[in-house]
Length: 115
Image (cartoon, rainbow, N blue to C red):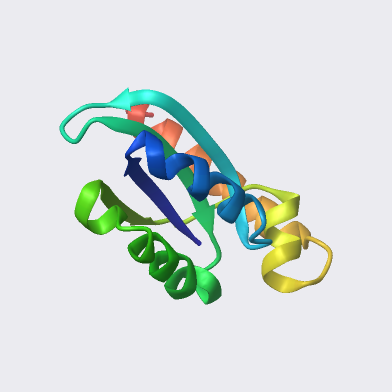
């Protein structure tokens, strides 16, 4: 999964949001109107499955967001979401995914506390 942070001019956001809402591989869609400065605009954050990322990024570029705003991509190492797991695999979530995520969270907590 890839997380995208987009700075969108307000006149583009009105076209962008329905486009992203209609894409079944886009999840966790968030818009924060007027939250971005330099370039000024709306903050649009969302996750997209790897298999659809090129198409979605192409649509963002077609809207001129690579020229009038900005597009930042971040690889997502772990996502704890039944909807994401079902979208990725097309199958029910396996408990192993949850155990792995819980181990990562516990290890991270131990590293923070020095324990």
